[in-house]
Image: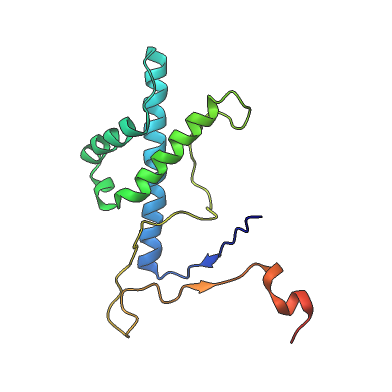
Length: 152
């Protein structure tokens, strides 16, 4: 039997960090919607939809057209394209496991992937410079011994 274990983290970002995270999410949503619109346009013309590699090449074009996309790491945007490619693959899968990809709207997100090595620089105040030092781990309630076993 394979045991899968995960951890949930809650970020308590400063205003600058929160702005950076909102920028990641907003740009990812923008790229999703732009590539989805491009694929719908290609479908109307009778052309083949863009695959993941072509989507990444189109991302370079989007970064040239929209300068605010250059300020964001490429990893979250490429992960968004990978998720969109997976959504298309599932939509055309003969097994009924998912619907056609739709436009993403702004809504409170449960989570969002961060780029590898994400680090928001803070002013030097302590030895924890450059880390998200207010990162706290909150285990799910089922692992909390106090609630589960009544241990004080």
